[in-house]
Length: 214
Ligand code: HEM
Image 1 (cartoon, rainbow, N blue to C red):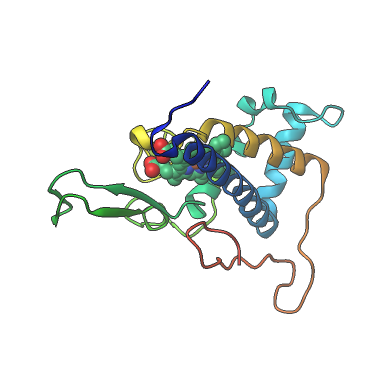
Image 2: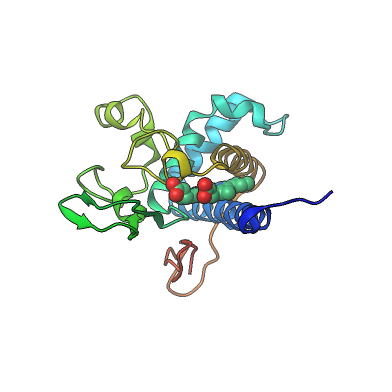
């Protein structure tokens, strides 16, 4: 049988899934672990949540994740401060105006996800790693608790949005939540004591479109 695909689309889509689906999730895990090591009280709270919901005799499994709301807030806060895809890209199909700028047809428009996720217009203390902001139990969280990474809350866009939004978001979140929970449950993580970084992980960002640690 001869398969007929315009523009080599099977090849392009498969490559998309591999490139878009591998680095992004591991980078999210790396940033989450780095933030947890640098915020021992957050780490302790996450351990306590896992202990109280799962206990010490069972391993974390995907089915428990719905009950680990603090862990989910940690991943959300990581994706806010360190969105692996810095930009979301669109090409205008016709002339249009965005935020007062006239955009001609066929223009590439980059949305700076990184900047929006740190914008003080949308976030209190935007540079602080504070997963609590996503939990529904104080005034700030009442505002932010409902902000999801996969719905149309445009101040938090790690997976993009709309028809071309990330199709792997659900899978990515499942993998990130379960792996992070297992690592917190099984290991005691600390930073190496080396000159300049006593007990802290260096959070410098690498130079790339995909936001990895330097
Ligand atoms: C934390 C992990 C991930 C992040 C942060 C992420 C982020 C994104 C973003 C921002 C886009 C562009 C969306 C837009 O333009 O609106 C995208 C597209 C895409 N992602 Fe992900 N992604 C992740 C994981 C995955 C996984 C696990 C897969 C597949 C197994 C995947 C497959 C894709 C594909 C195929 C596209 C292109 C969709 C299209 O062009 O229509 N991603 N992703």
